[in-house]
Length: 95
Image 1 (cartoon, rainbow, N blue to C red):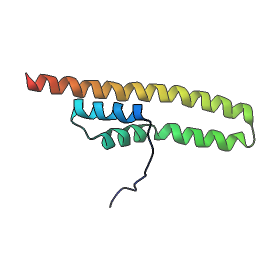
Image 2: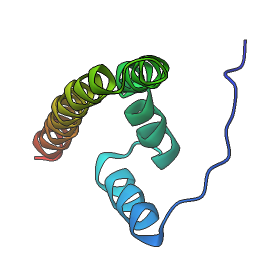
Image 3: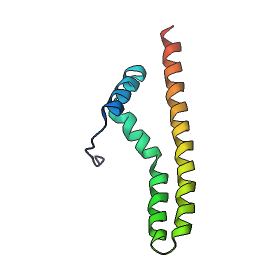
Image 4: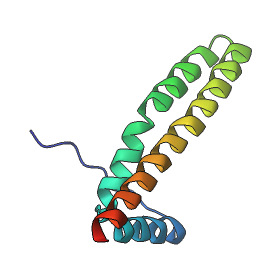
């Protein structure tokens, strides 16, 4: 079964960054973008939950969204670590 597709617009900086990551890792830029979005799914779910709570309790929603922001930072760092490991493995394989 095919995965659903989504067309998005990117800034030139984002496009250039994805292209450079793709060139360095040998991974298609669309796969990098998709994997990064997938890793952020728990954050999107948290944001959705917080927005639902905001309809009834604004201060609780702010707490939830703050916690979600910290989760984003953690998952972004993990993703960056995976990319760096991949690059290092490829460099070692070329020696």
